[in-house]
Image 1 (spheres, rainbow, N blue to C red):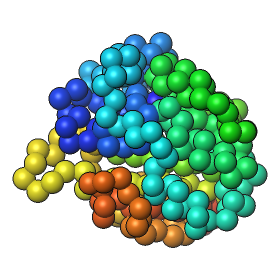
Image 2 (image 1 turned 135 degrees about the vertical axis):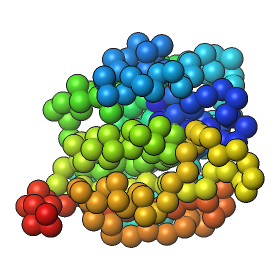
Image 3 (image 1 turned 90 degrees about the vertical axis):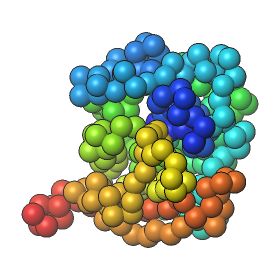
Length: 254
């Protein structure tokens, strides 16, 4: 699934969960992928593209062939133990470039995507060690049931989904992370040039919105504009690091 959105020239094909500009994998419609779509998300189907078809015909401008530069910057900056004991979840993993970059540090990593073809291609790449891929919708409580992760790597999935689904996204991440778990992500703040049509995906966001969405369950521990970026995205992204707080801490803030 790469819950990711499309770059500017991606908007002709509506809903790239991770579209043109955003990372290493594309999404297919949750229905055409044969994945159960949670009722709360069914309103999205009219705006979703058949991502398997796009992979089939090679219409994948989001496929950069390498991990996201901000992730590589983060891995250089963050000690491996900061990710916890694993596993680490990569929602909307696409063909798995980010998954493999994380696995190369010795982490156990799980990538999930709603595109059958993306998952098949990710599995076809020789394994680094400790990574796996699943076909599924991580927003669906049925997929999340019984799962627990020490960290989540977010790569523009947040900016690809309909903004109305962002509360569901933040709840899903909180549900999947263990207490003290790390949410690390690169958020696409300004995907559109001045005067350009701003309809997404990708959908713009702000640091304030990101913090507000995750504040019921997380505390921000760091954030910065990455020095490394894909061409055209320099200065438009923001890396945010959040730590899941205990239920008692959340109750104490109420």
